[in-house]
Image 1 (cartoon, one colour):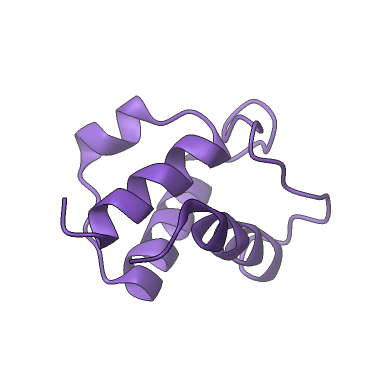
Image 2: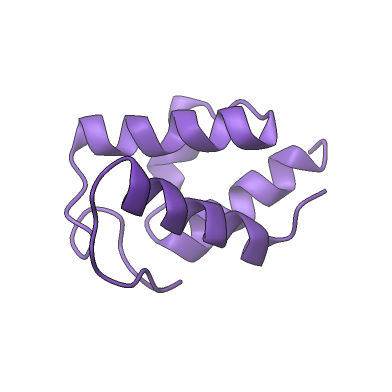
Length: 82
């Protein structure tokens, strides 16, 4: 099971490599207001995390998550079988 810091590192990689984000990603960053992700950017991020950690994230999961840290914790939890 990955820990949230490992997932956060992967989030930063996807944002940098696939979405062209040039700034540092912090755990408290809001995915929409701070990182300026639109629906396509969020989808790209989610698909990248699902592929990397072999998890499935539902639409209701996404509606509960606002920050990088919350997303990392959710993916780590799902990857652990919860």
